[in-house]
Amino acid sequence: MAIEREDVCILIPTLNEVLTITPLIQDFREMGFDHIFVIDGNSTDGTVQAAEAAGARVVRQSGKGKGTAIIEAFSLIEEPYILMLDGDGTYAPSDADRMLAPLDEGADHVIGDRLTACDEGALTRLNHFGNHVINVLFKWAHGAYLQDILSGYRAFTQESLERLNLKETGFEIETEIAVEVVRNDLKVVVIPVSYCERPGTPTKLHPFRDGYKIIRTIYRLAKVANPLFYFGLIGMLLTVAGGLLGVYVVYEWFQNIERIPMTILTVLLIMAGLMITMFGLLGDLFLAFHRETTQELKKVREELEKLKRKME
Image 1 (tube, one colour):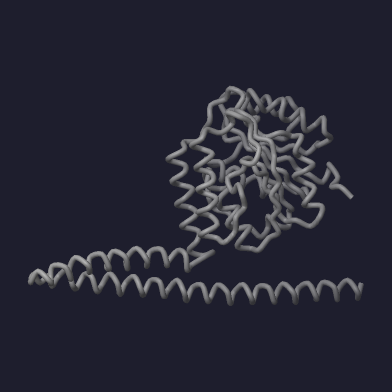
Image 2 (cartoon, one colour; image 1 turned 90 degrees about the vertical axis):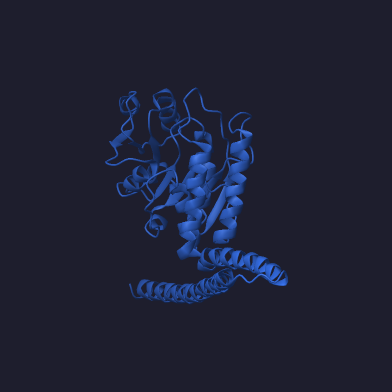
């Protein structure tokens, strides 16, 4: 049985999207979706008025940034299913049913993959390449290849949202959602979706600046999700630096030149690198134990719920 329209909230974060928000809302309303929620980042071009006129519920976010808007919106939604997409007209409402279908089949989270079949001109070669690099880095750091972790087209169950601990305030929010989904072992389904060229509105993304922030977020969040990667990378860099310096010291020694301070620095770098790597190994062991304990507690909780239902 398909998910009922009244059980779905269409969440649209916006910032100066007056050119696209009205047709976007109208398309969803024509498809039978009545719960359309626009969380606006204090637009100055009439986006709020246009969205309200089109029949959406509109709330102005209290802070700044896309992440802040999404986190605030999640706390205000009561419907059991949420379909989220950007308000810039790049995502197609016609993909809504395909995005929601996996939730009806037991998935916790659905990601709309833009990269498989995006329209010509929708992404520059630089952006397309950058997205693939970020997806690979995410796999190295968090152990899952989700094909398009930066996609703004996503579907959630209300229950799965309650398990996500989200804090990012900017465009890094999609990355944090992907990290939390993997960390909490949620069932994820990736669906190829259409991605259209922006209809005349300027992009708010800066490839290099925002790309750096996203990569930094992937690495920073690995401290909890994958400590071996986080500490191991630091340890490897220190060990390699110590090794290269050691090669120079040995070469100089063969030339009858003693480099005592450099020798001490070499030993310290290698020892520090190995110790930090050991911290990563220990952290990984503790994390594995925590995950096993969490799984056992989940099984116990499920058994208790089954027993409770039988008694009722």
